[in-house]
Length: 457
Image 1 (cartoon, helix red, strand yellow):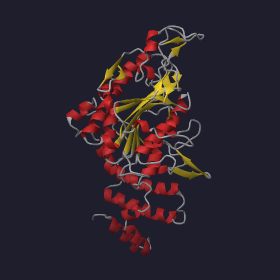
Image 2 (image 1 turned 30 degrees about the horizontal axis):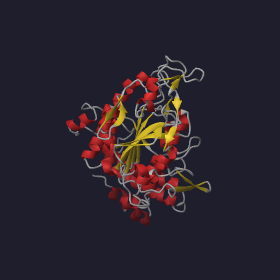
Image 3 (image 1 turned 90 degrees about the vertical axis):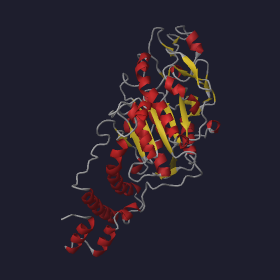
């Protein structure tokens, strides 16, 4: 005999295990689960230019003077003393060249990104609020360099909800965790459902995605029963947003079992598309896979997708204290996929309403303690990031560092300014996107931040 949700519920009612009123409510099933969904789409504060964000984070602190901020001064004075004890200038190890109609100079490390530079706004005047990995990493993600705070992805999820109830609104594709670990995608005091869901490239990107019940119908029956009793428990506790979020998480997890496997399956992508990302057919990891899956998740309505390159091992991230030559290995693995992602989004009509952010926690020092030193130290006073799509100008450079690349020379952009500008393009006023916690209203940008209107199209 086929077991169905309706027959199971009626059998329980007939046996006296369910009250008649409970039977009616449980038969409503998914409709009851949908009511009050904290991930339901929300209207922005004002008309938005973009619907979603793909946030590309390079762990370790990418050297600005070796990538997107050419400094002829350093090249001319390479190995010369600065006049300070044990301090020598270090020039870039790679040549810069002009790309596109805009003629923006990009390092030879990123020829493919250079080929799409007319779609990109390069910010050469970023400034972080901390100079160590932990503080700078959570600073760019949460706006706070010292305390746990919700990440920008969690704030976007909280502010706008999701366009797909079967997938999380905030996904993080990360083979390894960066400095500060899961804090970079944590929700802190926001309802837990807005926390980022981590995906690890490989044969099983999300653990335990397989269904344990004998059929989807049986599993749906189990969830409806859990849903009923959860709702009874929630009655009278409606103010507990975390409880409501946990209840909704069962529905999201069930939806993910149905939809996520198809979203991760890139086997039906064309050979031309795989080539854009530098992928071999059958590949299930690598930054190209991360970028392609990000596009597939964006297509399915995921609101915020973060791609993290590198963990905490300095041999495999951008923290080039010892050897800048590591960049010869690191840059090629992200250069082609990122350019491919931009081209793919454009070909599908998604570029204009998708914000791409490429950033890192800080730059690298322009001087070294020994003229033969091959690496660079931390440098948070000025560094480079870039944005593209989502209503940003393309082929533009904003801000500048001084001739040595040591400090901001004009148009400083703080981490709070960048965060405020991203929210603005999503139709969110960063001063109005608040959450009441511990007696005060918190926001991503705290009491700081301005929208950098000069880089908007």
